[in-house]
Length: 350
Image (cartoon, rainbow, N blue to C red; front, side, top):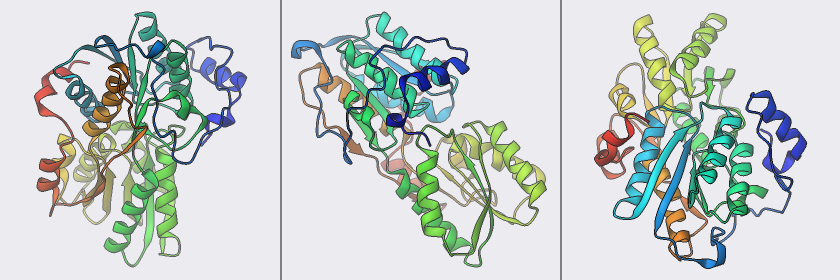
C-alpha cells in the first residue's frame, strides 16, 4: 500500500490523471503535517468561525455501489433523521479520480458537510483537505489507520482491519488444523482496507500450514471475485479455502461454488448484506468477519453533524467486529444490523 504521506502532489496528480479524471489539485494538497498513532483526540471540523449550522446539504460519496454501500448510506440517513440537513449521495465507480471529483462537486454546490466512504486513502485525504480548506467538516466511513490526512477528518469510523484479519485467520486455523492452500480475494488495493486484513491474517497463520497461493483484487465485484477464484482453482485444484474481503464478492463466489458443486472447500468472507446472510450455514459459506456497514455511515455522519451544530466530535469511534457463523448470525444481526431497514427504500436507486 502507498501511504497518503508517501505521495508527493505531483505523484498524486499523475495517478489521478491516469484515471482520465483530469482533476486539478490545489497547491497545498498532500502536505505532510505529521500524524499520530491514534489520530487527533477531537476536531472542530474546520467550521469557519465556529458558526452553528443546522441545515444545508451534506454530500455522501461512496466508493462504488453494492449492498454494502447501500448499508453505509442507511447509516447516514439514520444520523440525519429528525434534522434539517439534506443528504445527497453519489458513488465513484471505484475510481479515485472520480471520488475526488465528487467531493469537489459537492463543495461547488455549497455542501456544509462531506461524508466519504473511501475509494483510496489518497483520494479521500485529498478531498478532505479541499473540504476543510473551504471550512467544511468531513467524516470518514472506514478509517484505514493513522496518516497525515487525519488532520482533515472531523471523525472516523475506526475499524481495526488488522484485528479483522486475525479473526479470519484464527477461525480458518480452527476449521483447517491440517493447513493447505488458500486463495485470498482482496477488495481494492490502495484503500488501506485489504492490506490491513492481509497483515493480520498473515500474522496469525504464519507457521500454521496454511499457504496463501493466490492473493488478488476482486474490486468488491462479484464477477471479478469469481474470476479470481476460477483462475485460482485452475492453477491450484487442491485449494482448501477461499477467503474474500467483502460480502459483495462472497455472494458471487458462493453461487459459483454451488453451480460447480464445490462443497469441500472452506469459504470465509467479511462484512454482511442480505444475500450473504442467506448463504451462511450452507456448504458454500462457513462464516464472516462481521461488522455493520450501517454503523460506519452512522458514525461518520454523526461526527459531521456534531461539528456543524457546535459540538466537539470524537475523532475515532471503534466499530464492533466478530466472527459470525450459522450458530450466532441471527442474534448478531438483530443486535447490530448491517442495514437500517427503515431507510432501505431510500437507497435502492442511488
